[in-house]
Image (tube, rainbow, N blue to C red; front, side, top):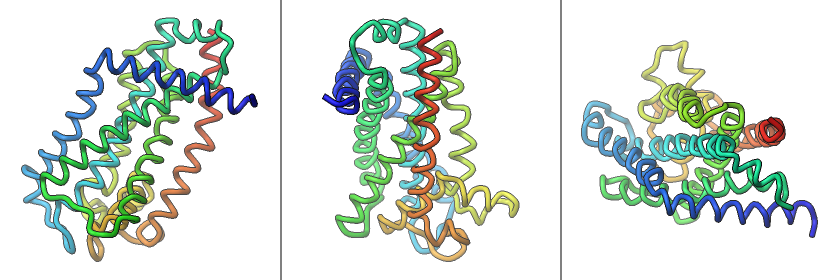
Length: 267
């Protein structure tokens, strides 16, 4: 068995271990599902009427933003899970076993990926109930979901670095979310970037969250018209820019996570 095959096999064992842990402590899954549902209901029924969007309804405009916010926030579970394993000495126990060192990171990110897929299914049903829909064909609909899932997986590796850099679960909970809020809200997820102050618009348009949100709107037929779409390269090529962002995140943060894991396991 090659080193890669061994790492994937051991990683799947750790994945199953993490999924069983969710089954025994379902609170984390329940609350990670309730939060995006509350965002959908709040923005669709409370704020939605005050935000006109040209070329589409606000609920169609909103849902891709909620989807991306959900997988981005869901990535924080990776930081919390790794910090918890380090604090409880689980990683030290793994080090005594004849298993690949990469299995812990592969298992953590894979189980969080599966958790994200479950939440996306729940979010899709909630969106359909409030009037959201995919107005393009089956292929573009699936392509949108694949892009969303891959982006969520990439975000998990950023959170892995955070979880391996802190010394307690409590710090991981704060550090795992604090950078998500400006990244998510300084984007086109909830309002068009054209409504932001002029100096903020380029920052919001080049934000990876904005690129993925606009890609989903294009793939699902939820995109607004005119200036509300944005401007420049990010508005003209959102899918290409999203793939570049995802590749850059994976290239930077996978090696960084492995390095942080080695240092954290040696402490």
